[in-house]
Amino acid sequence: MSESAPEESNEIPVRTRKCPKCGKRYSFRSVGQWKPYPFCSERCRLIDLGSWLNEDYQIVEPAMDPDALGELSDEELMGMFEEQPPEDFGH
Image 1 (cartoon, one colour):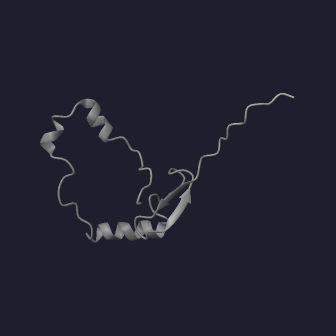
Image 2 (image 1 turned 180 degrees about the vertical axis):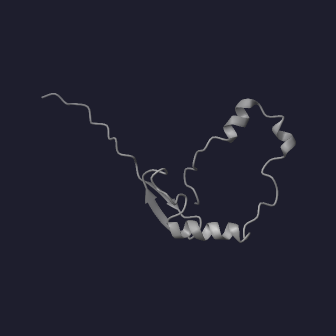
Image 3 (image 1 turned 90 degrees about the vertical axis):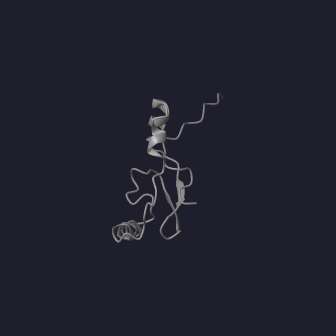
């Protein structure tokens, strides 16, 4: 009797996140397939959008001093624009 290697699963692992609007924990498999991401529902997504449109949220200062951008290498600049969701968004 020979043992065969275990089959690799093509299934995408389940991720669990906390909704930044209501705090509810929810699970999903893929950001691309979870339309309201990073929210738990379309309702929370729309409530958050309404808050932005009502100017309830404000960005009070730039995240980085524009003069400091000239001091960064091309690799550092490109690294700033990579889209990678945080490991536990909203936690």
